[in-house]
Image 1 (tube, rainbow, N blue to C red):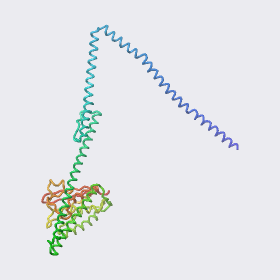
Image 2: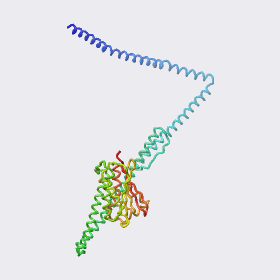
Image 3: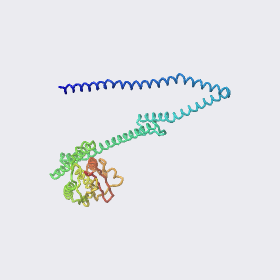
Image 4: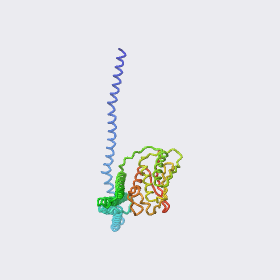
Length: 389
C-alpha cells in the first residue's frame, strides 16, 4: 500500500513538472517573437529618423554646394554645367533607347512577323538571332518550333502523296487481274472456248488471277496493320541455330522443286537466343527469297543464306546471283509497290509489298534490314536481329 502511495506521489510530481514545462514553452516562443518585433521596430525607427533628418540635411547640403559654385564661378559656368548635364542625360537616354530598340523592340517585331508568317502557313520562316538575352532564347525556341512545323508539313505532304500513290497502285494492281478474269469469263460465256481443254486453261488463268487478288488484299491488310502498329506479335525466346535449320530445310525443298540452287551456311559457333515471332521472321525471309525468284533467271538462279554472329546481334544474309539493282533504285526497294522493272508482273509473291512488309517486320523486332547490290552480279539482303543477353 505504501509503495502504491509512493508511486502515485511520484506520478503526480512527474505530471506537475511536465505541465510546468508545457505551460512555459509557449512563453519562450512568445519571448522570441517579442524580441524579433522589437528588433524590427528599432530598424523602422532608424529608417524613419533617416527620412526625417538626413534627407532634408542632404538636400540643404546640395543647395549649399550649388550656391558656393555660383559664388565662385558665376552664373555662366553653372549654366554650362547644367547644359552639359542635360546633354549627357539626353545622350544617355538616346543610347538606352538605341540599346532597347536593338536588343528588345526589333527582335520582338521580328518575332511578331514570324508568328504572322506561321499563321499564314509559311513554316520555312526563320528569325536571325542577333541578341543573346531572354529574347534570344525566345528566338531559338521559335526557330525550333518553326522547324518542327515544317517537318510536320513535309510529312503530311509525303503522307498525302503516298496515299495517292497507294490508291493508284491498288487500282492498277486490281484492275489488271479483274480485266483478265472478265475477258476469260466473257470468252467462256460467248462460246469462244469450245474444247474442254481450252475452258480448263481459261479457268486456271481465272483461278490464278483470283489467287493474286487474294494475296494482294492479304498483303495490303498486313501492311496497313504493320504501319499502324496493330499487328499482334507473339515474341518468344528462340534458339536461332535450330530455328534457322528448320526454315532452311523447307526453303531448300520448295526451291529445289523449281530447280533453283540453294545453300545455307551457319557460321555461329555458340548457343544464341533471339526474341522473335517465328512466323513473322519466316515470312520476312520468304518475301526476300520471293523477290529474288521474281527477278532472277530461273535456269541459272542461285540463292544462298548465311547466319553470322556479331556479338550483340545476328545477321541473316540472303544473297542471289540475279540481275542486281541499279544504284539509283536501291534507296526505294523497301517502298511499298516499288518495282525495280517497269513490267508489273504477277510472279511468286509479286504484289509489290513484299519487301516493304519485310522491313516493317524486322523493325518491329528491334532489328534492321539493308541491301547491297551490283548490276549483273546479284543482290544481298542483310537482316539484323538483337541477341537476348
